Image 1: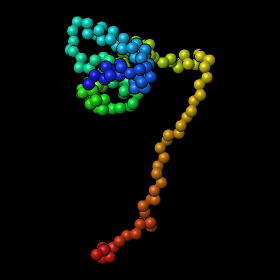
Image 2 (image 1 turned 135 degrees about the vertical axis):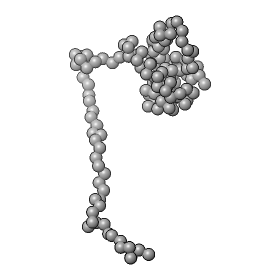
Image 3 (image 1 turned 60 degrees about the vertical axis):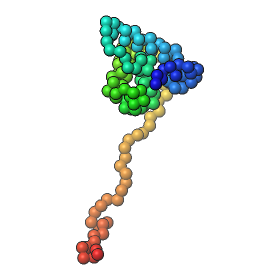
Image 4 (image 1 turned 90 degrees about the vertical axis):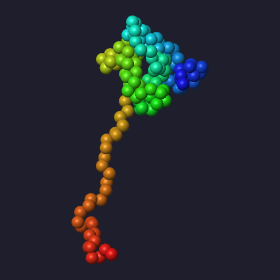
Length: 146
């Protein structure tokens, strides 16, 4: 099943709900990936089992839905290790290109924008259970058990 051909037919609202990005952003990512792939394999290389479009969709599923590599690989019909390699390659290419990078800490400190930070306490606390000791535990004797 080629998922990109199905999703491509959706209107812009449905496309964004499924992928998590606007169609123009998806096309820009696709352009960057195709250029990088063409540069990497300009002389030769194996044919792709998944198109670059489907690889990008799989990466977006991984980032958006927090699905495991095994689940995504099973839905696309490839090995888990290949899915891992594909998603890592996409991440590296998009980060290296720089269009989709977030500003660094220094840039945020220079700007006049105000940010509201909400902290959530997610520390672990032990479950309170009664402690086992001789005073609280009733011992049964062998002769009393029938």
